[in-house]
Length: 272
Length: 272
Image (cartoon, rainbow over all chains, first blue to last red):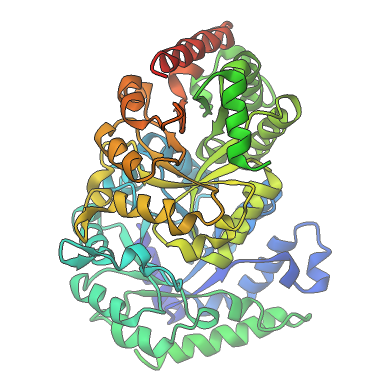
């Protein structure tokens, strides 16, 4: 089963396009969690155990774990292993935004798909298709390329005009076309840019988009659904991190996260 | 002392523009090193101890260490710590090619500059200046932005025409201009593209370039020196990894690496 099949099954089972971003930060964790030996893992485990019925994917961002050094990497591994053992049907996306020359990317492939053994990874397009072959050749995995990112300054390069079209459109066309030989490519499109999302959906009607930027970053569910859904009322992985993870900072954080995730899943589904 | 001052001092002391890329791969290590508890660290230590007089910087690439999981990250830390303790005057560049939204980049800043405590890092430009502020605000560190990379397919996006100029030129102009408020920015320019190097040097006459692609990748020292040197006959950090690290795979690997590094330093200096 490849990544997109696994994702579609998870969307069916959970009736959800919601992805929870597992991005723990020490200073935001509940006090009783901070005192644990593996606080990030304990926090994630509690979040996962209360939200698993409501999500189509989990997305840990590598930066939060790397901040702790080897112990953080270990807790990232423990997290992905926990999901694989207890909730095997839910895909795990590593948000790592990697991208090096081809021979060096083999090291990142080992980290992401052998050591962590997650289902998908996010990558920078800047070095081109040739450099990303070690990823693109993995038919069973999801290869998610940054296209139009959610941050306020993303237009500096992404919206420059390349031979008559914005750079993000050039990326969308190439990735949805010649990069996608094995039908394993996805695109990152920020919820904060609905008109760009609309344009990208137009030229990549059957592709799945990973959508960051809902909630704390200011993106709106209604905009994403209006401009991003495919003809089957799916084709989106809508990520939320902070507004779910830190819905409460007390002992009830996991239940508060569940309530927030349910609210967001249901809000999304009202537009499907 | 900021990164560029530290680099310049190291260039003076070693009379060298050579940087050795510390990119260990298990299947290429000498047999007696493979059997050690920390083979990457032991390998690096031996290479550093024989080459330190010949280099202006060391550049470990994170991918090779991440491939081993937490144990690899630990050996990366041991390597940077070893250089800092024994050869404090030599700057360490982490080739990590990171780049996320601003709030997430704080995690990478912690990994690179708190946990590893290296002197400089390589970054992707695709998300724009605003996203990289957590790096750009670090006045004492070297912030090295990918501009024209050394891989065969780097032109797919980097050489597209943006408002009348190639994208790599747009990157070079912005990074050398408004991104460089604290004079802490450098650019990555591949040795395999001498005509692009010439153009970039023309619009960024005083900037330091990190030059990968010499040796195994096919870039030539003569081309780099002809088109890349600044008016003070420096302004380049010329990296070589494989041709030095694996000059011999026997017990004499460190001495063979020294001989190869000396040959390359001297070849570079014949053009200065």
